[in-house]
Image (cartoon, rainbow, N blue to C red):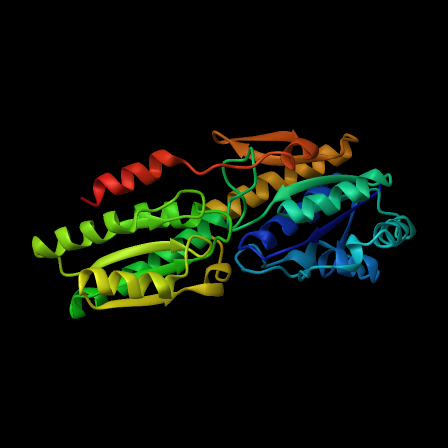
Amino acid sequence: MRRIGVLTSGGDAPGMNAAIRAVVRKSIYHGVEPMGIRRGFSGLIANEIIPLGLGSVADIIHRGGTILRTARSAEFMTPEGPPIAVENLQTAGIDGVVILGGDGSFRGALKLAELGIKVVGVPASIDNDIPCTDYSIGFDTAVNTVIDAINKIRDTATSHERIFIIEVMGHRSGYIALDAGLAGGAESILIPEVPYDLEEIAAKLRRGQARGKLHSILVVAEGAVNVFELGNQIREMTEMDTRVTILGHIQRGGPPTAMDRLLASRMAAHAVDLLRQGDTRKMVGMKAGQIETWDLDSILHSRKQPNRDIMELASILAI
């Protein structure tokens, strides 16, 4: 293994820079030359490949986003795209690539593997929807960002005695909503994977009002329901002042938490070791506090399911 490339693809996630740093410095430590690929698979096709040295990754462990930038590439998904990418990698002398991203990024990784490039995936997604691994890079930071917003919204909700519906990211995954909802003391949590009962939600809100509760917080994953329609329905059913807040892309930004920095550093360093050993078509992740490895093919043929116990506990604690 003479040269290892690293790219970030799909949605950015806090901690990606910490992972890039780990790839670069672990490679150099073992006498392997690290190369950065800008703008994901799009940049790979455009041959945006640059050398990375120790100074290239100085003072980035605490920064959100990704210094390599990220982009989605329709061209890479065409039959002509992967061969161009592979030719650019071979011309640059890159023997293996660490790919940071989610399932779409890993599908791209397998296309490179099918054409002879050694690849290892590192899960980086604030949605935490990647199978097998307990956590993906960026999730912990996103949850803490949501908690900070809930804390602030609760202050004004109490002052005005309002119901606040807070929409968080998660088109197909309710992990952010689940963890932030439980940690933030939400009265109800709505996620795409579990049907909700509007009558039950309204009844809980009315019970809270009857015992003198000054505010209520609902946390909703964006893929679960249209929050503005939900707000109108709850307003009509409870006759309470109801407001909607959409947190949006604020959840993607900001300095990564200590957990995300540790997770990114450990997983990315292990990915370099796998490539040095000649392994390919793998994903690294964390299970019960330990870094483990899975076949990429199996990752893409399974789906991560939310922890229903968290949702049940959140409901119990919100009585």
